[in-house]
Image (cartoon, rainbow, N blue to C red; front, top):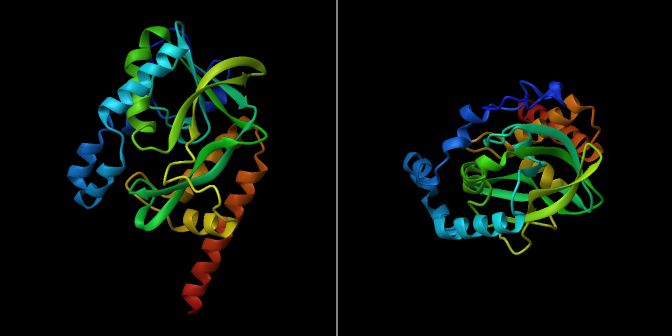
Length: 250
């Protein structure tokens, strides 16, 4: 992790459960390189932010942040694959927000236009459990560029500085909140639609089911009980099992 301090000092149970940023697929992620291998996804280019738009957004956030290390609140895939170098990871909770499975993926990552997938986004709510990563001040330019190239590639999120409780203490953190004006955000998705999308969605990163499983697995390692995610996973697995039985019997 390029640090004299052990990033997992406070949470050794996460060692081996978070992909080393230097080996992460997202470390060198470039959408145009992906599209060279998957020309059927070229339509996605019209849905993405331009490089100039991403850089302007990133600069605005860094100006708001000011000097010093930056904490990033993770509630989805960043919990197991941040891709940016961090000097510390801590358990965290973000009040007034909630993890909601409302991001419909048609872009090819964990779903397609023909068979969409589903991922989580951060929305208003009663509190969200997750992780907080600390990016050292001297690495802000390179590591936030990597983060923006991934999280701000599309128009699903609004980068937001909010106060999280990091191991119980207030800490200003950067996070990515659902943009209700984005076509990918479906705030009125039903439970049955969530189950179906999570059961069938698949893309070049993996399946929507794996995404949900990873969220629950990270919480299990931390001793966090997230009843909503656990219940949703059980329903999705039951739906898949029932469909497989129907297929065999049919």
